[in-house]
Image (cartoon, rainbow over all chains, first blue to last red; front, side, top):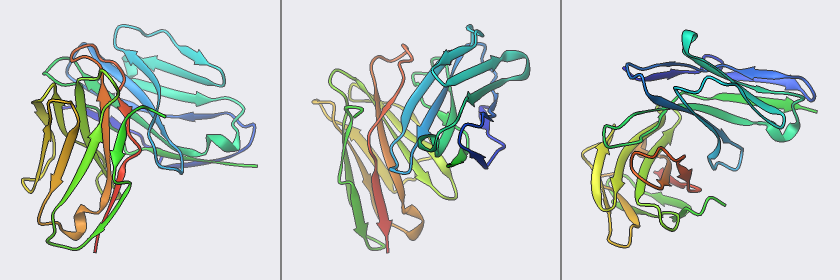
Length: 116
Length: 114
């Protein structure tokens, strides 16, 4: 069965702290895609990253980095030197290969609060 | 701005009523997806259309239906509304079936059923 687990419901940090958001997924497919989306207080869903199952290279984009480990079925997201603007709910999502659809299976989200 | 538009932004209605939510995908995108975000169910996939054809259904109630028109805009129809249907409904679009482009989400329609 397809499933995405974000065990951390809420995380609070002080500005400039590093924070890691955990994501564990379950799938029977060998080919799949993993995503992270950000939902700020305004409510929209903002795409952050897509990673396919054959690419285990870690990725860094500014203060954001992602660690994909197939051995542990995890796709964790780290924010370095967090800022107040990073406060949002972050969703990890899974998309499996063609059954005629790219539908996303979302985790329950992690609410990150960054205090000044 | 994702390029995906949804109307209306807010909708308040009563139980038993019927509403229609509208979505216009990004220019050139053939796929439209609908998702529901509620406090108890989280973000759930409802339905996927590709170039006017239904591709997949998720946890969509029988009281709900959708379609995608020749100009590629989509409508989600919710009928016999119940209090539990109150949620944020998102539409997303992507480029090509099978290419796994990221889905671009609209701003959502917040439905409140009183």
